[in-house]
Image (cartoon, rainbow, N blue to C red; front, side):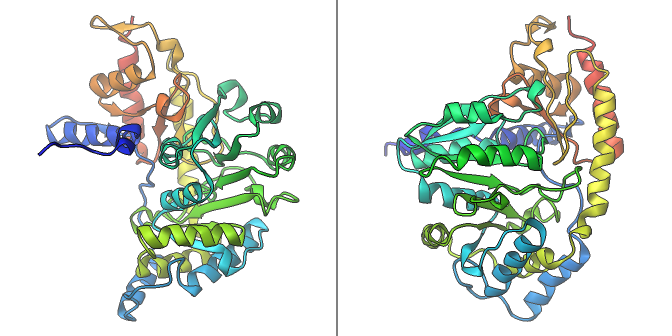
Amino acid sequence: MKKRTSDLLDRLSESATLAMAQMARELKDSGVDVISLSLGEPDFDTPSELKQAGIDSINANETHYTPVPGTQRVREAISKKFKRDNGLVYNSDQIVVSTGAKQSLANVILSLVNPGDEVILPAPFWVSYIELIKVAGGVPVILPTGIKEDYKINPEALEAAINEKTRMMIYSSPCNPSGSVYTKEETSKIADVLRKHDNMYTISDEIYELINFTSKHASLAAEPGMMDRVITVNGVSKGFAMTGWRLGYIGAPKWIADACTKIQGQFTSAPCSIAQAAAATAVEADPSIAHSMVAAFLRRRNAMHASLSKVPGINLNLPMGAFYLFPDVSKLFGKSFNGTTLNNSDDVAMFLIEEAHVATVSGAAFGTPECIRISYAAADEVLEEAVRRIEAAVSKLV
C-alpha cells in the first residue's frame, strides 16, 4: 500500500521544545551526562492538598463523564478566581475547561479563524501558536521585537500591523519564551489600539500568571471595553506544578465559549474528571500557595542572570516572570569550533548540547532567531553546573 499522510501534517512543524527534549533524552540514554534546560515544566511536585483533592475525587467515585465544558464546581471556582484575582466577571457558562491550555488555545483558534484570516503574533511567541494557526488555515503575521524593547510590542507597531484581514492577536504575559511581563500601563495602551477594531479578537495567554516577579498581574480583558474582545486563557500547569494533570481553561464571551464547547465535544469531550476536582481546589486556594515556588524561581533567575551575563557573546534582559531566560546570542554567529561555524541560533543550540551537554531551544522556533531559550526550572546546583559548562564551551569559540 502507498503510505500517504495528509497535507495538513506536511504544513505542521515538529515542536522545537519537544524535539530538543527528545534529543536530550536520547543522549542521556546513550550515557551522556546532559543537563536539559529545554522544557517548560516546574521541577516541583504538585502541592499535597491538591493531590489529596484528586485522591478524594477518586474515593468519591467521581470517575464518570462530565459535561463537555467541565463540571459546574470547577467552572464556578474558575469564575470566582477570575473575579478575585483579575477583576473579570465571567459567569460559569462563559468558562470552558479543557485538556491543557494548549487545547484551550486550539478550541478558540478553530472557532474564530477562517482560512486566509490574519493572526498577529508578537515575537517571541510560544511555538504552538503558529502551528495552531496553520491548522485553522490562518495566516500568521509576525510582529518582531528584540531585547532592546524587553521583547514587548509598542502600540504604534501593533496599529500598523492591523488591516481588514486581521482576525486575531495572540500574546502571553508573563511571556513564554522571554519571561517579559506587560505592565498595567502597557496593557492599557494595547487596549487603546484594539478597541478601534471591531472585527478583531485577542487571546491573552496568562498561563504563567502566578510566576510573576512584579507587584501585579495585568489582564487585558480587565481594561475598559475589552471583555467582549478578549479570550483569557489560563490553567493550573505552571503556577501549581500540575503539568501532568492536563487542565486548562478559558473565560470568554458566551458565544465564543459555546463555540469552543462544540469544537471540544467532537475532539475530546470533557477533560479528566479527577483533574477537574484537583483544579477546582487549586483555583479556590489562596494564590499564596505558589509563593515558595515563585521565590525559588526568582532566586534562580537572579543567579542565572548574574552568571550568564558574564559570558562573552550572551546578551540578557532581566525577565520579570515565568522561568526562562531568552538571551540574544547573535554575537556568537560567525564564530567557529573545530571547523564548524555557528551561523544562527539553531547552530548555537546544537553546539551547546553537543559540546556543553546542555539542552536549550533555538529562538527561531519562537520567531526570534537571534536568541535561545533557557529554562531555569531546575535545581540550583544543576543550574550552576549548566552555566559552568556553557561558559567553558563558549570560551572555545574562535
